[in-house]
Image (tube, rainbow, N blue to C red; front, side, top):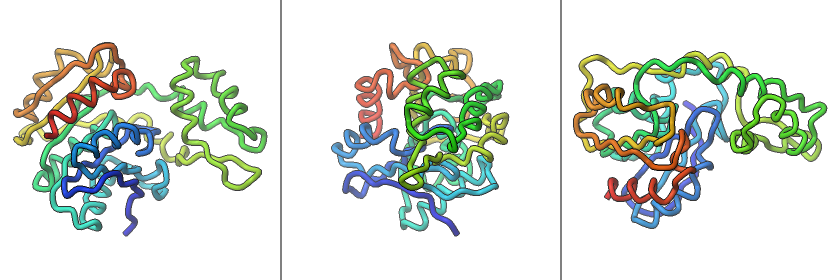
Amino acid sequence: MKILHSNLIGNSDRDLFIIHGFLGMGDNWKTHAKKIAEKDFRVHLIDLRNHGKSFWSKDFSFELMVDDIYNYAKHNKIKKFSLLGHSMGGNVSMLFSQKYPDFLDKIIIVDIIPKEYKPHHENILSSLKSLDFKNINSRKDADFHLSNYIEDERVRQFLLKNLYWIDKESLGLKLNIKVLYEFKNKLSIKLQKDFKFDNPSLCLYGENSPYVAKSDFPLIQKHFPNIQIIKVPLSGHWVHADNPSFFLDRTINFLN
């Protein structure tokens, strides 16, 4: 059994697992993890399969990612923890609460709803897939190549965090882009009709995010009856990056 890679921050018997979004990695959350750890938490920055430093597999699904988190908890002898998941990581977290509720203390769902989303990652995935590392020898080269597809510099910087040096001469991607490309139209989830998670829950969503609308609230409240829904001002889908102080303040208050 393969175990997910993680980076641990803090020393406490209160565990928080942070689950990153599609094409991300645990390290994206390092700054936040340090602040949360100061409030007496041990934060696990986990890399999902085919992401970051975790193992690659041709098998990729939400069910497998949920079981990976379960196996990680069992392997580390952690019987109870809280989950914070952003975007795809939020979907993984919600499905985890459905399958393994007894492991969970609290859940924080960041800017995602358990509903059908239209596929919209084609452009980003095509740009990453077309990176030719025989001709791309620097981060700058890669950025220039991606700029032909992606205007938004912040999105490019986020994606470029996946670059690494295989050896002194050659760059590669931490992402298993071949497998993730195949998954691009399967990024939505639906929870079981009668599923309810009664523990304290929090949904943080971006004021300007296209992912969450007020009309979605009844759906998430149905499955998470004990949920607070908080709009994060001046933020889009990456609420934690757009308004970090507000995001952290609400997250830490809720966890404590």
